[in-house]
Length: 497
Ligand SMILES: [Zn+2]
Image (cartoon, rainbow, N blue to C red; front, side, top):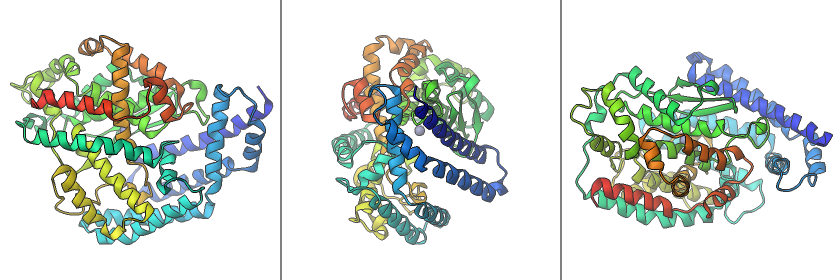
Protein backbone atom coordinates (compact mmCIF):
# COMPACT_ATOMS: atom_id res chain seq x y z
CA UNK A 1 0.00 0.00 0.00
CA UNK A 2 1.33 3.41 -0.91
CA UNK A 3 3.08 5.57 1.62
CA UNK A 4 0.79 8.47 0.74
CA UNK A 5 -2.28 6.40 1.54
CA UNK A 6 -0.81 5.46 4.93
CA UNK A 7 -0.04 9.13 5.54
CA UNK A 8 -3.63 10.15 4.72
CA UNK A 9 -5.07 7.35 6.84
CA UNK A 10 -3.01 8.52 9.79
CA UNK A 11 -4.36 12.08 9.53
CA UNK A 12 -7.94 10.88 9.05
CA UNK A 13 -7.43 8.56 12.04
CA UNK A 14 -6.46 11.53 14.20
CA UNK A 15 -9.46 13.54 12.95
CA UNK A 16 -11.64 10.57 13.88
CA UNK A 17 -10.00 10.32 17.33
CA UNK A 18 -10.83 13.97 17.99
CA UNK A 19 -14.42 13.32 16.94
CA UNK A 20 -14.85 10.26 19.14
CA UNK A 21 -13.19 12.07 22.07
CA UNK A 22 -15.82 14.79 21.61
CA UNK A 23 -18.53 12.12 21.54
CA UNK A 24 -17.22 10.74 24.82
CA UNK A 25 -17.47 14.22 26.35
CA UNK A 26 -21.02 14.33 25.02
CA UNK A 27 -21.84 10.95 26.56
CA UNK A 28 -20.42 12.12 29.89
CA UNK A 29 -22.44 15.35 29.65
CA UNK A 30 -25.61 13.28 29.45
CA UNK A 31 -24.72 10.49 31.84
CA UNK A 32 -22.58 11.76 34.69
CA UNK A 33 -21.51 15.42 34.44
CA UNK A 34 -22.65 17.59 37.37
CA UNK A 35 -25.15 20.29 36.37
CA UNK A 36 -22.68 23.20 36.67
CA UNK A 37 -20.21 21.63 34.23
CA UNK A 38 -22.05 22.76 31.10
CA UNK A 39 -20.18 25.94 30.24
CA UNK A 40 -16.70 24.41 30.45
CA UNK A 41 -17.90 21.37 28.53
CA UNK A 42 -19.16 23.63 25.74
CA UNK A 43 -15.68 25.18 25.48
CA UNK A 44 -13.98 21.79 25.47
CA UNK A 45 -16.24 20.55 22.70
CA UNK A 46 -15.74 23.71 20.65
CA UNK A 47 -11.94 23.37 20.95
CA UNK A 48 -11.94 19.73 19.88
CA UNK A 49 -14.27 20.53 16.99
CA UNK A 50 -12.06 23.38 15.82
CA UNK A 51 -8.85 21.32 15.93
CA UNK A 52 -10.52 18.44 14.09
CA UNK A 53 -11.89 20.78 11.41
CA UNK A 54 -8.52 22.50 10.85
CA UNK A 55 -6.72 19.17 10.64
CA UNK A 56 -9.25 17.81 8.16
CA UNK A 57 -9.48 20.73 5.72
CA UNK A 58 -5.70 21.23 5.60
CA UNK A 59 -3.97 21.58 2.22
CA UNK A 60 -2.03 18.42 3.03
CA UNK A 61 -5.25 16.35 3.11
CA UNK A 62 -6.39 18.05 -0.10
CA UNK A 63 -3.16 17.17 -1.90
CA UNK A 64 -3.12 13.59 -0.68
CA UNK A 65 -6.73 13.07 -1.80
CA UNK A 66 -5.88 14.50 -5.21
CA UNK A 67 -2.73 12.36 -5.59
CA UNK A 68 -4.52 9.17 -4.54
CA UNK A 69 -7.62 9.72 -6.68
CA UNK A 70 -7.00 6.88 -9.15
CA UNK A 71 -4.75 4.75 -7.00
CA UNK A 72 -7.11 1.86 -6.21
CA UNK A 73 -9.53 -0.51 -7.91
CA UNK A 74 -12.90 1.33 -7.73
CA UNK A 75 -14.60 -1.60 -5.97
CA UNK A 76 -11.98 -1.76 -3.18
CA UNK A 77 -12.52 -0.52 0.36
CA UNK A 78 -9.61 1.87 -0.15
CA UNK A 79 -11.33 3.51 -3.14
CA UNK A 80 -14.58 3.89 -1.17
CA UNK A 81 -12.68 5.33 1.76
CA UNK A 82 -11.09 7.92 -0.53
CA UNK A 83 -14.41 8.68 -2.23
CA UNK A 84 -16.18 9.34 1.09
CA UNK A 85 -13.23 11.32 2.46
CA UNK A 86 -13.08 13.45 -0.70
CA UNK A 87 -16.81 14.15 -0.53
CA UNK A 88 -16.61 15.17 3.13
CA UNK A 89 -13.54 17.26 2.39
CA UNK A 90 -15.19 19.10 -0.52
CA UNK A 91 -18.21 19.85 1.66
CA UNK A 92 -16.19 21.01 4.64
CA UNK A 93 -14.05 23.28 2.45
CA UNK A 94 -17.09 25.16 1.21
CA UNK A 95 -18.24 26.31 4.63
CA UNK A 96 -16.25 29.28 5.97
CA UNK A 97 -15.06 29.00 9.56
CA UNK A 98 -16.68 32.38 10.42
CA UNK A 99 -19.98 30.84 9.40
CA UNK A 100 -19.47 27.89 11.76
CA UNK A 101 -18.67 30.29 14.60
CA UNK A 102 -21.77 32.40 13.85
CA UNK A 103 -23.91 29.29 13.63
CA UNK A 104 -22.72 28.18 17.08
CA UNK A 105 -23.69 31.54 18.60
CA UNK A 106 -27.08 31.76 16.85
CA UNK A 107 -28.11 28.20 17.70
CA UNK A 108 -27.04 28.52 21.35
CA UNK A 109 -29.33 31.56 21.69
CA UNK A 110 -32.07 29.90 19.65
CA UNK A 111 -31.95 26.87 21.93
CA UNK A 112 -32.39 29.04 25.05
CA UNK A 113 -35.27 30.90 23.38
CA UNK A 114 -36.88 27.60 22.40
CA UNK A 115 -36.69 26.33 26.00
CA UNK A 116 -38.36 29.51 27.24
CA UNK A 117 -40.95 29.58 24.45
CA UNK A 118 -41.87 25.94 25.02
CA UNK A 119 -42.10 26.49 28.79
CA UNK A 120 -44.46 29.43 28.29
CA UNK A 121 -46.09 27.86 25.24
CA UNK A 122 -45.50 31.07 23.31
CA UNK A 123 -44.17 30.76 19.76
CA UNK A 124 -43.56 34.53 19.47
CA UNK A 125 -40.56 34.18 21.83
CA UNK A 126 -38.91 31.65 19.52
CA UNK A 127 -39.99 33.24 16.22
CA UNK A 128 -37.18 35.83 15.72
CA UNK A 129 -34.54 33.21 16.60
CA UNK A 130 -35.99 30.63 14.25
CA UNK A 131 -36.02 33.30 11.53
CA UNK A 132 -32.25 33.74 12.10
CA UNK A 133 -31.73 29.97 12.01
CA UNK A 134 -33.59 29.76 8.70
CA UNK A 135 -31.48 32.60 7.30
CA UNK A 136 -28.34 30.71 8.32
CA UNK A 137 -29.59 27.49 6.77
CA UNK A 138 -30.34 29.34 3.52
CA UNK A 139 -26.84 30.83 3.62
CA UNK A 140 -25.39 27.36 4.22
CA UNK A 141 -27.21 26.10 1.12
CA UNK A 142 -25.78 29.03 -0.88
CA UNK A 143 -22.21 27.76 -0.28
CA UNK A 144 -23.00 24.73 -2.47
CA UNK A 145 -23.65 24.47 -6.20
CA UNK A 146 -27.34 24.92 -7.03
CA UNK A 147 -29.30 21.67 -6.68
CA UNK A 148 -32.74 20.77 -8.11
CA UNK A 149 -34.16 21.98 -4.80
CA UNK A 150 -32.35 23.94 -2.05
CA UNK A 151 -33.49 21.29 0.46
CA UNK A 152 -31.41 18.67 -1.43
CA UNK A 153 -28.24 20.18 0.01
CA UNK A 154 -29.50 19.78 3.58
CA UNK A 155 -30.89 16.30 3.07
CA UNK A 156 -27.59 15.18 1.60
CA UNK A 157 -25.84 15.80 4.93
CA UNK A 158 -28.03 13.14 6.57
CA UNK A 159 -28.91 10.87 3.62
CA UNK A 160 -26.04 11.06 1.13
CA UNK A 161 -27.39 11.09 -2.41
CA UNK A 162 -31.07 11.42 -1.47
CA UNK A 163 -33.15 14.02 -3.35
CA UNK A 164 -36.09 16.07 -2.12
CA UNK A 165 -38.10 14.90 -5.14
CA UNK A 166 -37.50 11.25 -4.14
CA UNK A 167 -38.64 11.89 -0.57
CA UNK A 168 -41.70 13.74 -1.89
CA UNK A 169 -42.58 10.88 -4.16
CA UNK A 170 -42.23 8.32 -1.35
CA UNK A 171 -44.26 10.36 1.12
CA UNK A 172 -46.97 11.27 -1.39
CA UNK A 173 -47.51 7.58 -2.04
CA UNK A 174 -47.53 6.79 1.68
CA UNK A 175 -49.63 9.63 3.11
CA UNK A 176 -53.13 8.75 1.80
CA UNK A 177 -52.64 5.09 2.76
CA UNK A 178 -51.66 5.92 6.34
CA UNK A 179 -54.40 8.54 6.75
CA UNK A 180 -56.94 6.01 5.50
CA UNK A 181 -55.66 3.27 7.83
CA UNK A 182 -55.94 5.55 10.84
CA UNK A 183 -59.51 6.50 9.90
CA UNK A 184 -60.44 2.82 9.74
CA UNK A 185 -58.78 2.13 13.09
CA UNK A 186 -60.48 5.04 14.82
CA UNK A 187 -63.91 3.70 13.92
CA UNK A 188 -63.05 0.16 15.10
CA UNK A 189 -63.39 -1.26 18.62
CA UNK A 190 -60.64 0.29 20.76
CA UNK A 191 -57.89 -1.57 22.58
CA UNK A 192 -57.44 -1.54 26.37
CA UNK A 193 -54.00 -0.68 27.73
CA UNK A 194 -54.62 0.51 31.31
CA UNK A 195 -52.37 -2.24 32.74
CA UNK A 196 -49.37 -0.74 30.94
CA UNK A 197 -49.67 2.40 33.04
CA UNK A 198 -49.76 0.86 36.50
CA UNK A 199 -46.87 1.14 38.93
CA UNK A 200 -43.90 -1.01 37.86
CA UNK A 201 -40.65 -1.42 39.77
CA UNK A 202 -37.90 0.48 37.95
CA UNK A 203 -35.02 -1.89 38.73
CA UNK A 204 -36.98 -4.93 37.60
CA UNK A 205 -37.96 -3.24 34.32
CA UNK A 206 -34.37 -2.09 33.75
CA UNK A 207 -32.96 -5.58 34.39
CA UNK A 208 -35.55 -7.14 32.12
CA UNK A 209 -34.58 -4.71 29.34
CA UNK A 210 -31.03 -6.02 29.67
CA UNK A 211 -32.23 -9.63 29.58
CA UNK A 212 -33.95 -8.91 26.27
CA UNK A 213 -31.10 -7.12 24.53
CA UNK A 214 -28.60 -9.69 25.77
CA UNK A 215 -30.73 -12.27 23.99
CA UNK A 216 -30.78 -10.07 20.86
CA UNK A 217 -27.00 -10.27 20.79
CA UNK A 218 -25.89 -6.87 22.10
CA UNK A 219 -22.28 -7.50 23.15
CA UNK A 220 -21.72 -6.25 26.74
CA UNK A 221 -18.01 -6.84 26.45
CA UNK A 222 -18.10 -3.97 23.97
CA UNK A 223 -21.02 -2.00 25.42
CA UNK A 224 -22.96 -0.73 28.43
CA UNK A 225 -26.34 0.78 29.29
CA UNK A 226 -26.53 3.88 31.50
CA UNK A 227 -29.27 6.17 32.68
CA UNK A 228 -29.68 9.52 30.88
CA UNK A 229 -32.47 12.08 30.29
CA UNK A 230 -32.99 10.74 26.73
CA UNK A 231 -32.23 7.34 25.25
CA UNK A 232 -29.41 7.39 22.68
CA UNK A 233 -26.57 5.28 21.26
CA UNK A 234 -23.00 6.44 20.85
CA UNK A 235 -19.91 4.65 19.51
CA UNK A 236 -16.26 5.42 20.19
CA UNK A 237 -14.99 2.43 18.22
CA UNK A 238 -16.40 -0.89 17.09
CA UNK A 239 -15.33 -2.19 20.51
CA UNK A 240 -17.01 0.50 22.62
CA UNK A 241 -20.64 1.11 21.66
CA UNK A 242 -22.82 2.43 24.47
CA UNK A 243 -26.50 3.02 24.96
CA UNK A 244 -28.53 5.05 27.42
CA UNK A 245 -32.08 4.66 28.65
CA UNK A 246 -34.58 6.25 31.01
CA UNK A 247 -37.54 5.27 33.17
CA UNK A 248 -40.85 7.14 33.00
CA UNK A 249 -43.22 6.41 35.87
CA UNK A 250 -46.37 6.92 33.80
CA UNK A 251 -45.05 4.86 30.90
CA UNK A 252 -42.84 2.29 32.65
CA UNK A 253 -42.53 -0.31 29.90
CA UNK A 254 -41.25 2.29 27.43
CA UNK A 255 -37.84 1.45 28.95
CA UNK A 256 -38.02 -1.99 27.32
CA UNK A 257 -38.76 -0.62 23.86
CA UNK A 258 -36.11 2.09 24.18
CA UNK A 259 -33.53 -0.55 25.05
CA UNK A 260 -34.54 -2.60 22.02
CA UNK A 261 -34.37 0.52 19.84
CA UNK A 262 -30.97 1.71 21.03
CA UNK A 263 -29.50 -1.79 21.02
CA UNK A 264 -30.57 -1.98 17.36
CA UNK A 265 -28.43 1.08 16.65
CA UNK A 266 -25.64 -0.35 18.78
CA UNK A 267 -25.55 -3.80 17.18
CA UNK A 268 -25.19 -2.04 13.81
CA UNK A 269 -22.11 -0.20 15.11
CA UNK A 270 -20.72 -3.32 16.80
CA UNK A 271 -21.07 -5.19 13.51
CA UNK A 272 -19.08 -2.83 11.31
CA UNK A 273 -15.83 -4.11 9.80
CA UNK A 274 -13.21 -3.35 12.50
CA UNK A 275 -10.76 -2.36 9.74
CA UNK A 276 -12.97 0.71 9.14
CA UNK A 277 -12.38 2.09 12.65
CA UNK A 278 -10.76 5.54 12.59
CA UNK A 279 -11.59 5.95 8.87
CA UNK A 280 -14.41 7.74 7.02
CA UNK A 281 -16.06 4.32 6.49
CA UNK A 282 -16.71 3.84 10.22
CA UNK A 283 -20.24 4.27 11.52
CA UNK A 284 -23.52 3.50 9.78
CA UNK A 285 -24.09 4.71 6.24
CA UNK A 286 -26.94 7.13 6.98
CA UNK A 287 -29.49 8.10 9.59
CA UNK A 288 -32.29 6.31 7.73
CA UNK A 289 -30.39 3.01 7.50
CA UNK A 290 -29.42 3.39 11.15
CA UNK A 291 -33.03 3.97 12.07
CA UNK A 292 -34.07 0.93 10.03
CA UNK A 293 -31.99 -1.20 12.39
CA UNK A 294 -33.32 0.33 15.61
CA UNK A 295 -36.92 0.29 14.41
CA UNK A 296 -36.61 -3.31 13.29
CA UNK A 297 -35.58 -4.56 16.73
CA UNK A 298 -38.04 -2.28 18.51
CA UNK A 299 -41.10 -2.79 16.29
CA UNK A 300 -40.85 -5.66 13.83
CA UNK A 301 -39.28 -7.88 16.48
CA UNK A 302 -40.17 -6.28 19.82
CA UNK A 303 -43.80 -5.42 19.12
CA UNK A 304 -44.57 -8.72 17.38
CA UNK A 305 -46.73 -11.51 18.71
CA UNK A 306 -44.07 -14.27 18.38
CA UNK A 307 -41.68 -12.15 20.45
CA UNK A 308 -44.16 -11.85 23.30
CA UNK A 309 -45.20 -15.47 23.03
CA UNK A 310 -41.66 -16.08 24.20
CA UNK A 311 -41.18 -13.23 26.69
CA UNK A 312 -44.68 -12.73 28.11
CA UNK A 313 -44.42 -15.56 30.67
CA UNK A 314 -41.21 -13.93 31.93
CA UNK A 315 -42.65 -10.44 32.31
CA UNK A 316 -45.79 -11.88 33.88
CA UNK A 317 -43.66 -13.64 36.47
CA UNK A 318 -41.91 -10.36 37.26
CA UNK A 319 -45.14 -8.36 37.53
CA UNK A 320 -47.92 -10.79 38.52
CA UNK A 321 -50.24 -8.20 40.05
CA UNK A 322 -49.89 -5.59 37.29
CA UNK A 323 -50.54 -8.20 34.61
CA UNK A 324 -53.11 -10.21 36.53
CA UNK A 325 -55.75 -11.53 34.12
CA UNK A 326 -53.88 -10.20 31.08
CA UNK A 327 -53.29 -12.65 28.22
CA UNK A 328 -50.40 -12.52 25.78
CA UNK A 329 -52.88 -11.49 23.06
CA UNK A 330 -54.25 -8.56 25.04
CA UNK A 331 -50.72 -7.53 26.05
CA UNK A 332 -49.69 -7.61 22.38
CA UNK A 333 -52.70 -5.48 21.40
CA UNK A 334 -52.02 -2.99 24.19
CA UNK A 335 -48.40 -2.36 23.19
CA UNK A 336 -49.60 -1.74 19.64
CA UNK A 337 -52.51 0.53 20.51
CA UNK A 338 -53.08 3.23 17.87
CA UNK A 339 -54.11 6.65 19.05
CA UNK A 340 -53.65 9.86 17.06
CA UNK A 341 -51.67 12.00 19.49
CA UNK A 342 -50.07 15.40 19.60
CA UNK A 343 -46.50 14.43 20.38
CA UNK A 344 -44.24 12.75 17.81
CA UNK A 345 -42.00 10.88 20.25
CA UNK A 346 -44.99 9.15 21.83
CA UNK A 347 -46.62 8.24 18.53
CA UNK A 348 -47.44 4.64 17.59
CA UNK A 349 -46.31 2.94 14.39
CA UNK A 350 -49.48 3.78 12.46
CA UNK A 351 -49.38 7.52 13.11
CA UNK A 352 -45.66 8.20 13.48
CA UNK A 353 -44.84 8.87 9.83
CA UNK A 354 -47.58 11.48 9.55
CA UNK A 355 -45.86 13.52 12.24
CA UNK A 356 -42.73 13.35 10.10
CA UNK A 357 -44.43 14.32 6.85
CA UNK A 358 -45.89 17.39 8.47
CA UNK A 359 -42.43 18.49 9.63
CA UNK A 360 -40.90 17.79 6.24
CA UNK A 361 -43.45 20.01 4.50
CA UNK A 362 -42.76 22.83 6.92
CA UNK A 363 -39.00 22.47 6.59
CA UNK A 364 -39.16 22.57 2.81
CA UNK A 365 -41.44 25.60 3.01
CA UNK A 366 -39.04 27.42 5.33
CA UNK A 367 -35.99 26.65 3.22
CA UNK A 368 -37.47 27.60 -0.15
CA UNK A 369 -39.21 30.61 1.36
CA UNK A 370 -42.74 29.56 0.49
CA UNK A 371 -43.69 29.56 4.19
CA UNK A 372 -43.04 32.39 6.62
CA UNK A 373 -41.80 31.45 10.09
CA UNK A 374 -44.54 33.55 11.71
CA UNK A 375 -47.21 31.42 10.00
CA UNK A 376 -45.83 28.07 11.18
CA UNK A 377 -48.10 27.56 14.23
CA UNK A 378 -51.20 28.00 12.09
CA UNK A 379 -49.90 25.76 9.29
CA UNK A 380 -48.90 23.14 11.86
CA UNK A 381 -52.34 23.02 13.42
CA UNK A 382 -54.11 22.86 10.08
CA UNK A 383 -51.99 19.91 8.99
CA UNK A 384 -52.49 18.11 12.32
CA UNK A 385 -56.24 18.32 11.74
CA UNK A 386 -55.89 17.14 8.16
CA UNK A 387 -53.59 14.16 8.90
CA UNK A 388 -54.50 13.09 12.42
CA UNK A 389 -57.86 14.72 13.06
CA UNK A 390 -56.69 16.55 16.19
CA UNK A 391 -55.79 20.15 17.00
CA UNK A 392 -53.00 21.02 19.45
CA UNK A 393 -54.41 23.08 22.32
CA UNK A 394 -51.22 25.18 22.46
CA UNK A 395 -47.84 25.71 20.74
CA UNK A 396 -45.90 23.68 23.34
CA UNK A 397 -47.82 20.60 22.24
CA UNK A 398 -47.69 21.73 18.61
CA UNK A 399 -45.02 23.54 16.64
CA UNK A 400 -42.70 23.99 19.64
CA UNK A 401 -42.44 20.34 20.71
CA UNK A 402 -39.16 19.33 19.01
CA UNK A 403 -35.68 20.65 19.75
CA UNK A 404 -34.23 20.05 16.25
CA UNK A 405 -34.87 23.41 14.56
CA UNK A 406 -33.39 25.41 17.43
CA UNK A 407 -30.09 23.61 16.82
CA UNK A 408 -30.17 24.35 13.10
CA UNK A 409 -30.99 20.72 12.25
CA UNK A 410 -33.26 21.15 9.26
CA UNK A 411 -33.32 18.15 6.93
CA UNK A 412 -33.11 15.54 9.65
CA UNK A 413 -36.72 14.53 10.32
CA UNK A 414 -37.46 12.64 7.11
CA UNK A 415 -34.76 10.10 7.96
CA UNK A 416 -36.92 8.79 10.83
CA UNK A 417 -39.76 7.94 8.45
CA UNK A 418 -37.43 6.60 5.77
CA UNK A 419 -35.91 4.32 8.41
CA UNK A 420 -39.34 2.82 9.09
CA UNK A 421 -39.80 2.11 5.40
CA UNK A 422 -36.39 0.49 5.04
CA UNK A 423 -37.00 -1.69 8.10
CA UNK A 424 -40.10 -3.19 6.45
CA UNK A 425 -38.31 -3.68 3.11
CA UNK A 426 -35.49 -5.53 4.84
CA UNK A 427 -37.98 -7.55 6.88
CA UNK A 428 -39.67 -8.92 3.76
CA UNK A 429 -36.30 -9.94 2.35
CA UNK A 430 -35.17 -11.49 5.65
CA UNK A 431 -38.34 -13.56 5.83
CA UNK A 432 -37.64 -14.89 2.35
CA UNK A 433 -34.11 -15.85 3.36
CA UNK A 434 -34.93 -17.20 6.84
CA UNK A 435 -38.06 -19.27 6.33
CA UNK A 436 -38.90 -20.02 9.96
CA UNK A 437 -37.98 -16.65 11.46
CA UNK A 438 -41.24 -16.37 13.41
CA UNK A 439 -40.60 -19.77 15.01
CA UNK A 440 -37.08 -18.74 15.92
CA UNK A 441 -38.37 -15.53 17.54
CA UNK A 442 -41.05 -17.52 19.36
CA UNK A 443 -38.22 -19.66 20.74
CA UNK A 444 -36.31 -16.54 21.81
CA UNK A 445 -33.60 -17.11 19.20
CA UNK A 446 -32.21 -14.13 17.32
CA UNK A 447 -28.74 -15.25 16.23
CA UNK A 448 -29.68 -16.07 12.65
CA UNK A 449 -31.43 -12.71 12.26
CA UNK A 450 -28.49 -10.79 13.70
CA UNK A 451 -26.11 -12.76 11.52
CA UNK A 452 -28.15 -11.83 8.41
CA UNK A 453 -28.10 -8.14 9.32
CA UNK A 454 -24.42 -8.36 10.07
CA UNK A 455 -23.55 -9.90 6.68
CA UNK A 456 -25.86 -7.78 4.54
CA UNK A 457 -25.80 -4.38 6.28
CA UNK A 458 -23.58 -3.91 9.31
CA UNK A 459 -20.24 -5.11 8.03
CA UNK A 460 -20.17 -2.48 5.24
CA UNK A 461 -20.25 0.57 7.51
CA UNK A 462 -20.17 3.60 5.25
CA UNK A 463 -18.85 1.75 2.19
CA UNK A 464 -22.12 2.05 0.25
CA UNK A 465 -24.42 5.06 0.12
CA UNK A 466 -27.86 4.33 1.61
CA UNK A 467 -29.84 3.98 -1.63
CA UNK A 468 -27.09 1.80 -3.12
CA UNK A 469 -27.09 -0.45 -0.06
CA UNK A 470 -30.88 -0.80 0.10
CA UNK A 471 -30.98 -1.60 -3.61
CA UNK A 472 -28.16 -4.12 -3.26
CA UNK A 473 -29.89 -5.95 -0.40
CA UNK A 474 -33.58 -5.74 -1.32
CA UNK A 475 -33.49 -5.26 -5.10
CA UNK A 476 -35.17 -1.86 -4.98
CA UNK A 477 -34.51 1.62 -3.66
CA UNK A 478 -36.32 3.00 -0.61
CA UNK A 479 -39.99 2.29 -1.27
CA UNK A 480 -43.10 2.58 0.93
CA UNK A 481 -44.96 -0.49 -0.36
CA UNK A 482 -43.52 -2.99 2.13
CA UNK A 483 -44.27 -0.71 5.06
CA UNK A 484 -47.87 -0.21 3.95
CA UNK A 485 -48.27 -4.00 3.63
CA UNK A 486 -46.79 -4.50 7.08
CA UNK A 487 -48.98 -1.88 8.79
CA UNK A 488 -52.15 -2.99 7.04
CA UNK A 489 -51.66 -6.65 7.93
CA UNK A 490 -50.70 -5.95 11.52
CA UNK A 491 -53.50 -3.52 12.31
CA UNK A 492 -56.16 -5.42 10.37
CA UNK A 493 -55.52 -8.32 12.75
CA UNK A 494 -55.36 -6.22 15.89
CA UNK A 495 -58.41 -4.08 15.13
CA UNK A 496 -60.37 -6.60 13.06
CA UNK A 497 -60.56 -4.24 10.06
ZN1 LIG B 1 -33.12 5.88 16.67
